[in-house]
Amino acid sequence: MKLCIALMSLVVSTTATADIYQYEDCDGNGTLLLTELDAAPGVNLSGLYLGCADLTNTYLVAADLSGADLTNADLSGALLNYANLPGATLTDANLIGANLHTALLYGANLTNANLTSANLFGANLFDADLTNANLTGAYLNYAYLSE
Image (cartoon, rainbow, N blue to C red; front, side, top):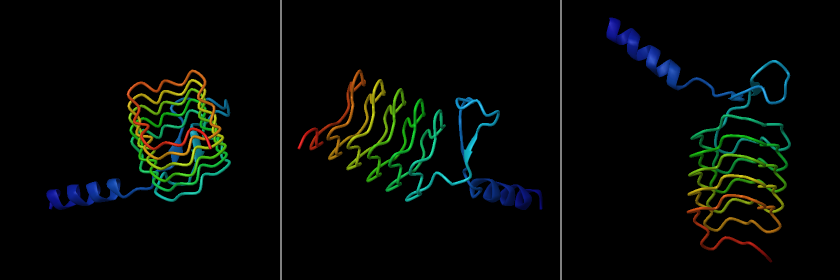
């Protein structure tokens, strides 16, 4: 009986929703909650403030983050394949080991972003601001850097 209860508890805890929180209160509003939307494939987070969001190892394949403010967000290890990020602000974002395969990043602000070992295969980076971005070990094959 105890094993059955423990297993049911495990199932409930692993299927709970995943609201998006900050790792610190960057917007100064006294709460760490950014949105009750789940960090899930295909989610529409366009235009939202997601500064200091803790999105480590999240599965955001084909998510719409166009125009979102991800300043200081932690996206290390995140799966952002086919994600839509045009015009997004990723200033000082941590994208170490993130997978941005075929992501749309045109016009995005990646100033001071850490893209160490990120997979940018086929990503569209046209007109993206990569000022002081760390691209050490980043995989840029077939990435579009200009028209």
